[in-house]
Length: 165
Figure 1: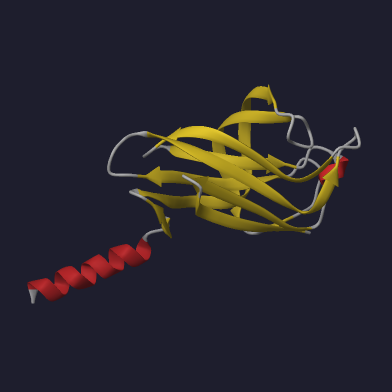
Figure 2: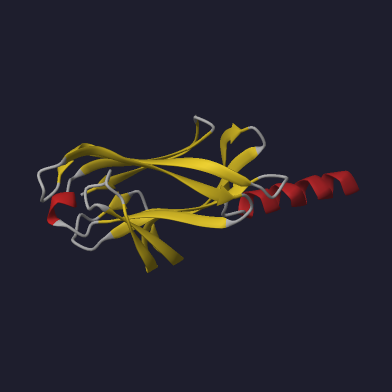
């Protein structure tokens, strides 16, 4: 009887969890999805990034999820993204490749065309991170499926699609 109660309690606790660990694993690393959708952040630093339409990459903190959704209003200033934790039995640093793929090529004010933005960051396991995209220029207002992907050791660990409307 105690085993049955323990099993039922375990199932209830598992079902109540709002965090979703992705089915994908790379070695001993998995991803826990803490939230995605419309969000806000504090911009802490702006770095140069030549392989992006804006030419910049914002380092941010204080991810705040406004609405968990895959549907994003295509409005100037709108920010959307993902909040996650790279789970591992050990605390270690992992090289992560981030890819944002656009529904069609984006041409910036300089006439440069981009199908995606791709960059590599080092992340520590068992810490909360986020990646966001802000629609801060008219040329970024492109409807359709925007795809976010994360790779570790060349293998896809996570994918999330957003529909801009």
